[in-house]
Image (cartoon, rainbow, N blue to C red; front, top):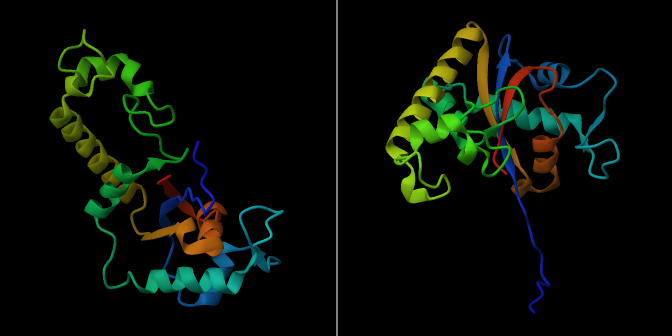
Length: 191
């Protein structure tokens, strides 16, 4: 039997599409949007030893916003996000493609009807899947969802963020700590 004796990681990251009423003009303005008036430190959990100064967090997010001002989020970039990770509870994927359970899609009647070359064949046989039709339908769904998001948020300033544990404890806190809880947003988890 072999044992691993060095560091083992199970990193994750999340992308966020966040809607602002207007573009924050300063770190202080953004800090007021992200945090409560009395909050000084920020972390993933209330018992987290890795608590970070909210000024540091607000400065990182502000810099990320400034970096996007000349290259704004497009319909295509938003649609891409709907395919890059499981969306969190705010926005479930189509019922024929449910990521919460590894093979739940394989037993879905709609999936079998629409995406298996032989509906009587095995749903877990990857050679039996009509990938072309599936990807075409899924791409159309992603585009429709992106168009709906833009329509629902017309007049809003929409920005994209990506944080993860690969950036250490600070990145983990920004990914898992519900950073955008005070703003309308969608989180895409790439675990």
